Image 1: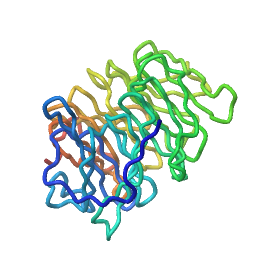
Image 2 (image 1 turned 30 degrees about the vertical axis):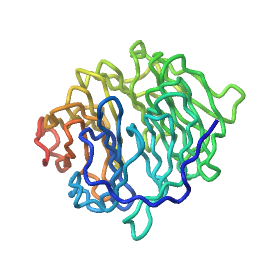
Image 3 (image 1 turned 90 degrees about the horizontal axis):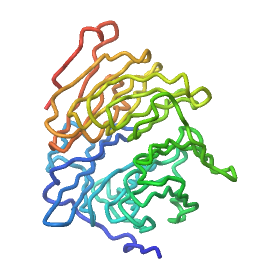
Image 4 (image 1 turned 90 degrees about the vertical axis):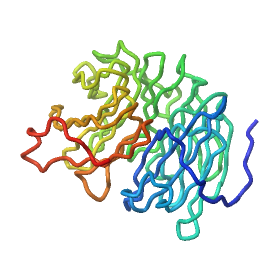
Length: 333
C-alpha cells in the first residue's frame, strides 16, 4: 500500500552535502540540480540541491535551496520549472517543489510503489507524467498531478538500469535492464513492450537516451564501456564504439542542431562523440566513478559532470573546426 509524506512540509537546506554526487540536471533557465548520497553506518542518506549559479556547486553556502531526503537518492529530474522528481533508495518516488523565491523546497508527495530501490526515472515532455524503474524488476508510469501510478509493468526479469521518455511523445519510452534487454514501450498497445536487438546487444545495457532530433534513434551504453547508436526501424545497422573501458553510467545529448553525445563511466573518464560518432573530447579529471552528466541549455558548448569524488566539473567543447585538436583536456575544478 502506498504511503504519503506530510503535505507541504517546508524543509531548510542541510549544513553539509553528502560525499557521493550521483546525478545532475539543468533547468531550462540554467539552474543546476544535484543529488548526493552517502553511507552512514548501515543506512544511506541523501539530499538534493539547487544552484542558480552552477559555478557555485557543490559549495553548500552558495546553493539556492537544498533538502535532506529520508534515504539515498539515485536519480532526479526537473518537472517543469518548479518541480523536482526524486528516485529513492527507500523504494519511493518523491516530488518536491521549490518555493519562496526559490529558497525553500517543499515535499508534495512520496509514494512507495516500488518494492526495492528506485534506480532511474524520466519525465515526459508535457510534465504531467513520468516513468520509473527499480531493482524490483518493475517499470511504472506515473500521473504526477494525481500522485499515483497509472500502470505497472514487469517485462524485465532482472533489475531495471535505465528508463528514458521519448521527447515529444507521452506514451513512448525505453527501458534497459540487467536481464540484457532493451525494451521499446508504447503504452497505447495491448502488448506495450517490444524488444530491440542489435549487433552489440549481447552485453548488459546500462544507460539509454533518445536522440533529440530523431524519434526513431537512441544511444545505448553497456557494462563493457561500449556506446551504440541504434535506429529502431533498422537495429542491425547500429554503430558501436568502445568509448570506455568499464560500465557506462550515463549518456546525454547536447542542444546543437547536430547533437554531440557525452558519455560517462566507472573508468572515471568523460568522452564526447560528434554526429559522425567520432570522439572529439576526453577528460580524465575525475578520481572516482563519474555518475552524472548534463548539457547547459544556455551555453551549448558547456556540459557538467559529477561523480563519487564529490567533484562538479564544467567542461567546454572547443570551437567548431578545432575539435580534432582536443584529445584530453583538464576541466575546471
